Image (cartoon, rainbow over all chains, first blue to last red):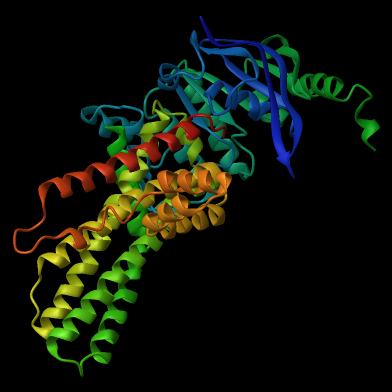
Length: 251
Length: 255
């Protein structure tokens, strides 16, 4: 079954500058399919359209043309929202709440019944190793701990698919290792994971397939399971794709 | 109920953001007034302190109401906490209604606290007891509040600038107190464009003079029921229409 499907998805940003409209391309004609249970990475340079793609799939942005489906539900759609967990880049949480309170709040909004909510909160806090700190206010949390809270809130309603946007950006090596280990555990649980990043070395450690996006267009799909030396080969493919003139062209 | 969850965290957010510190300023003004007017006769002193107290309650509630309502959603967009809310199975209008109810509850509590302090001060200084006029003045403040919070919240979604939205809401509040004057001007002005503009303003801006229950009090029979139901209907319907407009704007918003 397809977890994600897009057909000619296009988004153009319109902004007004002194009453004059200005247009910039978000993504153009995106056709993409992600299988259920797959870990898919969207790889691209900054501003290439990774976040736009995720936001369109989540209904935070509306497409100008084309359509997107999450588990056969055309988005934006409330039923699709029930199946989705999301963690944006550099998430901000209500700092006056504790980890327990914030996850409970998102659980309520996701419609998790009261009878099972506490059990679910215990489970996700255990999974992200925050049980001991559950009553601490988020203002006292480190960046890595906040990222773990972010993962916990995305899992509270047991979604089928998880969207993680630049999950490891800004984390220290310990935080990166923690996130990688969490992703692998979620993978073992057969969750579909859709993540965006520009860090090749991390993408290869967790993803099954990678889509390379450049200037708003999906230009290549790479099946990492077919590569022997994943790290080096993906880096070469990526650089050849986004900079056909070669990395030397930059200098 | 997702609306109640949103309202509950709005209340918690406001309590922790120290919105109630404005009560301290209110106490200071009230104590200051009682000292300044202590040389007057007890009945005159009670009347002056009551008037100042009610005016302060209305102004302070208005200021906190507009400030809280305008920043509610704009801050959430700026902080990007809105992403995690709008990707939940939550209807956008549920979010707007929940946020609105949360602010109204907080401000109601603010009004009750201010009026309780005022009554306590009056009792201690002038041995004055609450009269119906006082109660109906408080109810009028509440009705004005439910309208102006809806206006401020919707203005924040339309203008997306907190300063513009606050200025617009204050302007609406001021014009709303001069509705009958607006109507007279519209009737008297001869230029057709100005006439249309004034009538538009008259019908679109809330008429706070309708809500003034204090002037409609019929002593000794009390508040006429038809007047009260008219005021209640006007306040709720006006706020609902403004909120529906806000929800329609919000439904098309991208994040």
